[in-house]
Length: 65
Image (cartoon, rainbow, N blue to C red; front, side):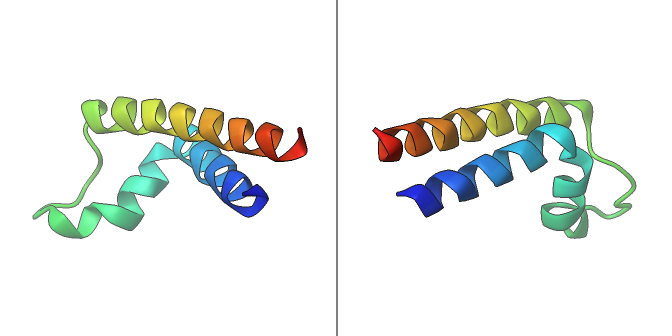
C-alpha cells in the first residue's frame, strides 16, 4: 500500500507540474503535426494529477495509521 501511495504521489505531482511532458510521452505520437497539447488536455491532466496526488497522500496516511 505504501508503494502504491508513493507511486500515485509521484505521478500526480508530475501531471500537475509538467502536463506538457506527460503529453509528449503519451499522446504526441497520435497527432499528425505533434506540435503541442491543447489547453483542455493541459487542464484535464492537471486536474487528474491533483486527484492522483490526493489519492497517493490518502494511501500513505492510511498505511501509517
